[in-house]
Image (cartoon, helix red, strand yellow):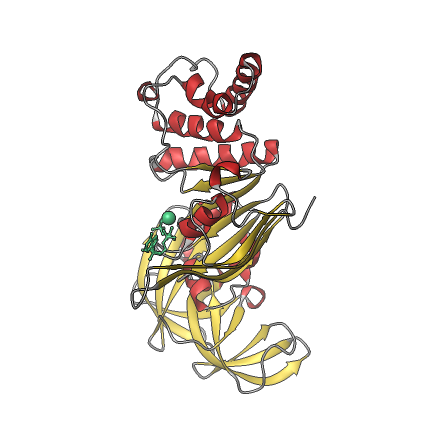
Length: 364
Ligand SMILES: Nc1ncnc2c1ncn2[C@@H]1O[C@H](COP(=O)(O)OP(=O)(O)OP(=O)(O)O)[C@@H](O)[C@H]1O
Ligand SMILES: [Mg+2]
């Protein structure tokens, strides 16, 4: 397995000229391993599609390089790159059948009739389109159309498969089942893939690794678990999952990898990377809602007042006012005797191991 199968090196894309320039992609560096599925995730306008279009060759980088399987493809025209792209709107030919749509690229490539038939049939079976070969796209559901689109890309056996929000035209339920299908298919075929989405749940469930982008820049690259547990900055912590931010200061260095935080006048022991913060440093404590414990109020503890209590079946969601900080708390499988009501005073504590500390940063 090549660790550097797809390499984006110092990629920059500036649109416009003169005073009206806009940097859509700002020094992006990514290495994708062979067979890996990497997602570009970030809010609208952060440069995901532009990055993908540079990989496919539809957009020429202002500067930087792109390598695929060791070859510099930075200036290779799109039709000569070993990539294919799956789009959000499928872009199927309406007057061609499913089979003809899938076979189209092979036909252009002048494969033999026999080879085209065999390859297309194999792919149709793979993506679950058997029996639909003679239908026209208009006679298919949205999910089936997206499968044709995927099949049409896979049939070309690209080195890198590019997918730009391929599920956003499907309804919520179909989106969830189709993303699982895509993931299974991608693993079965073992194809190196770059997947663009602004849906964090989609990215988390699909990806080997996620690239978080913001304003053209990479904020963090990592596995979904690493990004959730150890967000690199406030933007990532806020964008991935829900997070409470508490300001604090590092107290004394209690032991090699433990520090004492002084938050809202209360001292907390927290596990962190050794040496990553100096004594007295101003920091943000990232607390996930499921890492907060609530109990009936006890003396000499950190206490707060429940502002809102919402029962969602599998969990209770609370908003707790702790010295004017509103903290969101999620309790899984709530026990009836431990459900708190609005107005109740509670003792609040944090599960030390799941806390994460960042250098202090203002809210956006
Ligand atoms: N051809 C262009 N000319 C000028 N600006 C452009 C051009 N293409 C994209 N941009 C700008 O570059 C920025 C990044 O666009 P891009 O399409 O890459 O965003 P995105 O992350 O894919 O967003 P979305 O989630 O909305 O699809 C945006 O501000 C966009 O307006
Ligand atoms: Mg886009």
